[in-house]
Image (cartoon, rainbow, N blue to C red; front, side, top):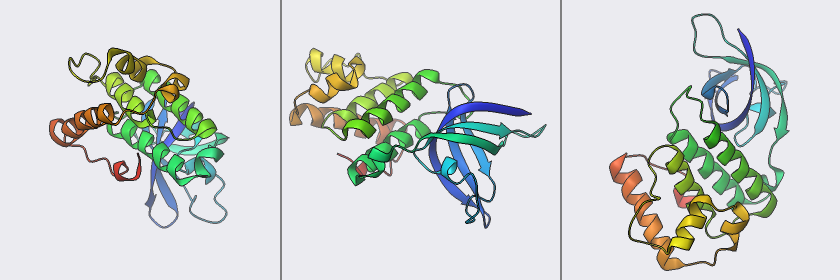
Length: 208
């Protein structure tokens, strides 16, 4: 079976001598583990489509009886050049992708989560890092994954809390830094990821 979908590469890892297993997050088919054949060779034609933090239009082939598609073609929509130009942007983009990867089960379509990730990457690509971005993205990803803190009784002021959860990225960028509120939010994340669901976020030490 051949099928097509848009997708964002969340991560990649080597397979054998020349292939890659690439985690592609798509709006219609959810999170897929995809075999990209021969992309680690110099002549690999689909190398760009297999790179982390890449947005593309993909074509996949799924053999009958298998749940492990192979990428057979596609085109790159964006490699987020602004993100790749600065380390702090790249680290935050990788953090976004890791969060979505860890909070998303395989082959479960989540178009709202896909749109959240794409919008956040486009914003980061255009405008760079700001104080509240990481926390706003994490709160929204948790909300969409069914683990939200929107109804938390104690903590930041209601206007800040609402903006972090549902304001535009422009509104999030306009929020003044508040170290006390940030410590509270980071504490929520630390207890949740470290205790409640026992997920280690490897990118966390590299983002602010």
